[in-house]
Image (cartoon, rainbow, N blue to C red; front, side, top):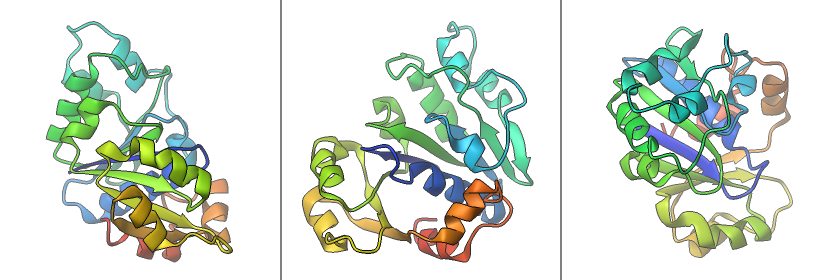
Amino acid sequence: MLIVCWSVKGGSGTTVVAAALSVHFAESHRDGALAVDVGGDLAAALGVAPPGETGLGDWLAADESVGGLALARLAFSVTAGLDLLARGRDPDPMSPRWAVAAEALADDPRAVVVDAGTGNPPATLAAVADHSLLVLRPCYLALRRATELTGRATGVVVVDEPGRVLRRRDVEDVTGLPVVAEVPVDPAIARAVDAGLLACRMPSTLGRALRAVA
């Protein structure tokens, strides 16, 4: 299974959603999970530091002799059942090697969750993903931008802030996509991320909200 999480604006909660999904699959999927950090913040959200400077961006910049198996070997263990492929150097979104990376990730027996950051994910990656999840907060600016970028999404994860006028139905009407989960803005989630405890102590509100996606 390959799930790609992305957003149209920074600060939407994409990294927390991707981190939480990867932790869930590490505990529930037979073969564990692989988290892939394209955006650059996934390691911090999971409370770990990559053991080296080499990651996905470095693999994308390598020549064709470096195949998909080498990509898998760059991942390191976060917790039991959960590995992380770090970002490394800034990944080139136009690299032709994304096609090879997408094939390798799609063929991985683990549940693979990609934090693709902001903007449309690479087309070859989105094309092979089982789910492409647009993560957004229900604000006018995010929805306005989403109308231009949702072509590769299969569903929306809404980060629900108190006091917002726009609701689930508004998001679905504007994007033309189903809302597959609503994650509440919860201080417990922020504390878990800030303390680096998300990988070992996920707040119950976050786990329940993403259960339908998983």
